Length: 94
Image (cartoon, rainbow, N blue to C red):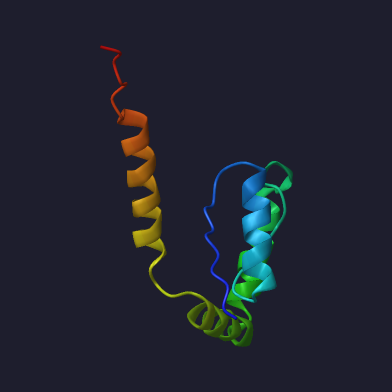
């Protein structure tokens, strides 16, 4: 049975959870909650990835095997629905 996930990366604790999902799937790296991550942490992880071609290939293959390439379409559809609901006219009592 195939599962579909919708991952929206946002600037709060949700990033941590989303990043963990990408990391667990083998296609990303989670450094933790953004407020706790330093520039040095990010730089160290970038350097580590730059020097590990095998890991980058594994992450790429995991991403290609996991993602369907339609995330932008799903996000746009979700946003359109949310905007339509927000702009829905109020019903007037006659």
